[in-house]
Length: 130
Image (cartoon, rainbow, N blue to C red; front, side, top):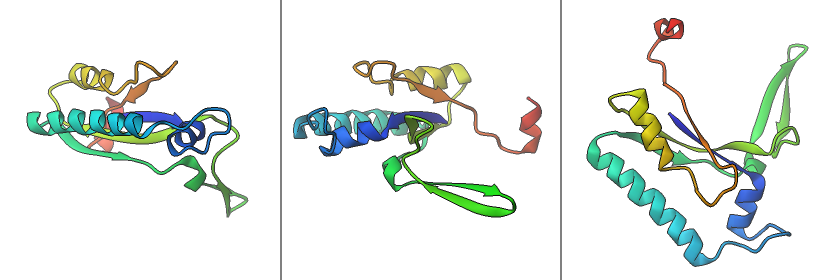
């Protein structure tokens, strides 16, 4: 699974809600969507794409913890962190190295400090030992 990260600020810039930065232009948003569509279409054609989705902005998220046996719910965004999971792409490919190679295509070269994580998806509890 390739995990894509962003922040509430990234979503705000995308939607035009950021007070300190201009909104992305319609052309910039279209270019971003076109890149993702082309990227995932190529993975689908190669047979490596399993699933890919974007996630709603952190402001629409909830964190649930249990304290003293009772659930405690916190609405997002979360003050503890700037970065949140923004989306994911699941691939089925020949190796972890290939998944890493694929992941590099999802890193935005214009985003300072931009990154994605690559993690194997476990098929069962027996995979935990490996």
